[in-house]
Length: 465
Image (cartoon, rainbow, N blue to C red):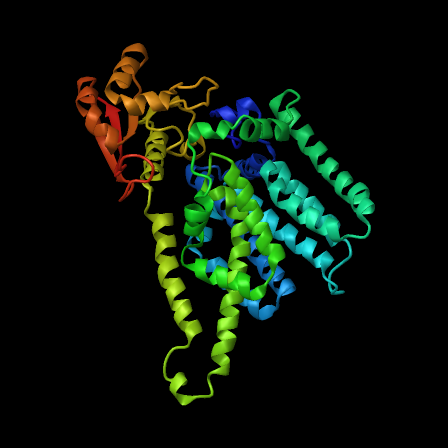
């Protein structure tokens, strides 16, 4: 939806029709678009870059508060190494600055854990109201992403078990603050949806009670432990494991195991779902590296050891050499064709060369109206979930029979001025498109290797002649 212009246009995906998404998170970017519109900066370039800059600002708070949390739990030495791990880890670099709701959830989780832990600390440097602030931040995180409650249920029950004033904590802090945030966000959602939609309940019903997420694929129960989370940690994994056993901080390591375990119960799994506990694992990596550095300092007395790099220096070189290239490749090269294509169409649209666009690719493969920033008829293949077993949505039908699907579509609807598709399907459709007076105008590199489908080496744009 274009917020910076009086004329509203765009597309609401099925999540909003089912009422499983809160408007609280998109509201942040809607306000940003309003500001850009007020300053007359709502050009396609600014509309693409500004949300990323805003999310990067949010991400910087995660870095800061992870440092503060590490210093609070351990010391400044561990905090410095933890910050190093946070900045170098490839997946954190790749994901935390994206405008995903999980990215903001991660930021709020780290900030909330710091204030919660600061209250539990005996240090007088922290205000007594930290727990209330932590509860407010936790409630906010659960409001934008209800599954964040998995994290805070563990934190709450562990401390509740040890608390002396349990009733006061529950009835004077947890319930009032939680209900206040829930009430305000519900009012916002009711206003935006135009009806009484209770998002947390709809979210739980779809994802937990009916396993609606399974429609988009499932993984074995052990996937997070054997593949997903291990890939996210990458070469930090051994350092994190060593840090867990050396620190003996079973409370935080238990939180990580709890979150991974609960998410493992669900059939549909994604890397980003467990992003909020990745900083905690990197904190254990920081602990391990801090101990390694201290051990090196004690060995500096011998001349022989001073002539060769210390173990900490070797570890730094190893982590940087394995993570930085990975981060840059995944962020700047891998699957970039979908963005390059929409940027090209945006420029063409501003020059009046685009009348309508049809995306013949799996749904949501490219950015959409927010990046094109032009009020043009566009269509993506529908992939809304269905309760009917064996149901094939448009995206599935297209992927199983590209020629038959497109032939029917071109015969029964008006022809768009531009078509966008992956090379893997374009090779099957080339003759059909040429027969309908389409020609290739641009081809963008997309990927060197396949992920979950056939190799989508490039994104191709065809235009009607």
